[in-house]
View 1 (cartoon, rainbow, N blue to C red):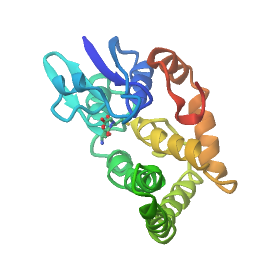
View 2: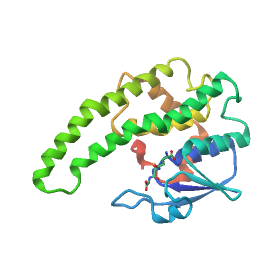
View 3: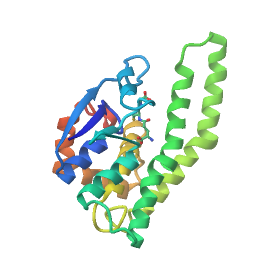
View 4: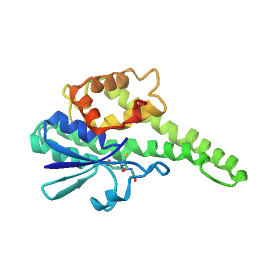
Length: 223
Ligand SMILES: N[C@@H](CCC(=O)N[C@@H](CS)C(=O)NCC(=O)O)C(=O)O
């Protein structure tokens, strides 16, 4: 039996969505974030030394990393991934790596620089922290995020889904960073394709079912 070690409000939500799309049976073990640090609880380290979510267990195996989990689950069922050896499969693999490998990096930097000036520090250090954070956001982080969003907006101008006309694990992979940007800063008025993509995924019955299963997912502002 597949067990999803699911941290509330996290990337793990997309694994629940994938499982619902694939029609696989699974159980959820729920974990709550520490209310102060927002980190995962220590119990998650019993499943995998890094204690991050998502992580799944299946048949005595522990599988971590969203991309690896998506590949593992889609290969089990043989849907939601283009046929191996095709150009579509190469594109699919690209997006699976891109989601965490490229797109999430500037987003995490934004999170860090947004929070940095609000952390406890001597009063005289705060204006300096604010200045450093603002400078980094303006000169590097935000231009990077904008470049990624423009690129993704153009890609979705070519087809409804990231790998052509059929939904795949690549769309599930990219859902979380796009939802996070929409929830935190907004995708921007001109990003019609990205907004339509989010609307399309949120209308899917499997997506809705996964939300019911996963519990709190406030990334889009819903409680
Ligand atoms: N690249 C990893 C990232 C995993 C990750 O950082 N997960 C976050 C949840 S969104 C987490 O577990 N955070 C809690 C913590 O770091 O303690 C993946 O995609 O699986």
